[in-house]
Length: 79
Image (cartoon, rainbow, N blue to C red; front, side):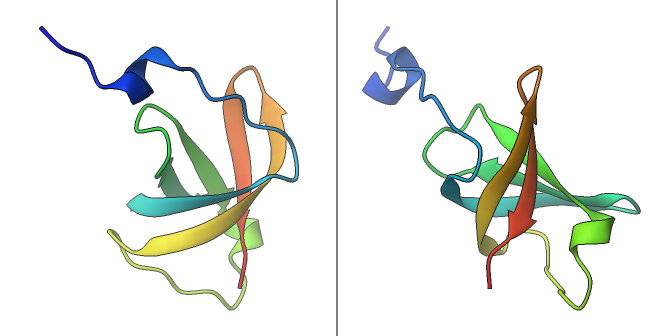
């Protein structure tokens, strides 16, 4: 049984850090984005941060981490 090297290293993310991601789910309160560099981490772009921005499920996006609270990532899209 071999695990990918990436699975063995926990990536530490910081507030204001920019990440690449993919939209995995759209809900009435925002868009969930899975981080490209760490398949076990995702965050939420709240609907209030999506003004004038349209995204689709599966779309690649660039985001900024605006808050980290108990391992939950609040994100905003970078144009």
